Each structure stands twice: as structure tokens, then as C-alpha cells.
Image (tube, rainbow, N blue to C red):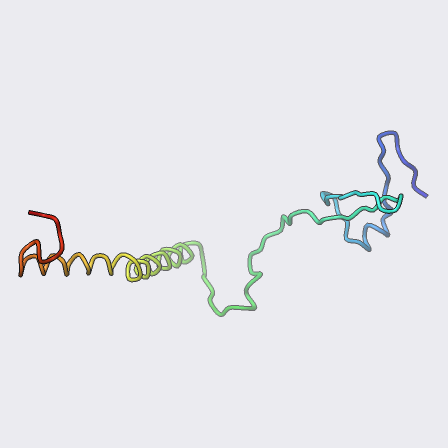
Length: 115
């Protein structure tokens, strides 16, 4: 049976640590419940690589870092074009329409304050 050490530490037996998945770096949350100590353990952030973890869910495969960089740049370009088409292009088209009306009918017909 474990004893409380001079610093208030208690050793949790290997069997209990394994059963609960307690590993070095786990965070122990303590609280008193009905006059007893209740400890809940949170696993530490993982340190293992996530490389390949999504492989079962995709058919896309990139052979090397250069291909990854190219794919990222391509995706950024596509996203920029989509953003342009959704937000900026309509404003530019509206300005172009105002310019066309101003050229055809004069500045006051386009609703501008230019004199």
C-alpha cells in the first residue's frame, strides 16, 4: 500500500496507471468529494507525428515537399480567385459601370459628386 511522502506525493501503482492510461506528463486534477480525494487525469499533448493519419480518407498523395509546396501555392491561388469573384470583383464591376455611365452621360448621371 503506497504511503504519502514528505512532499505529499503518492505513487500510483503500475497496474492502475496502465489501466487508466496515465503516462508521464499527464495532468492530475484533484478535488475533494465527500471527504475523499478524487483525481482525474488528462493525457498530455501528443508528441508523435501525424504524418499519414488521414491517408485512409483520401486518394491524394504528394511525393515530396516540392509537390506539397506546389499544391499549397495552387490552393492559395484558387482561394484568391474565389475571394476576388465573391467580394472584390462585384465592386470593380460596379465602379466600371459607374465609369461607363459617366463617360456616356456625364459625371452627375453616374451619381458621383465630381464636378
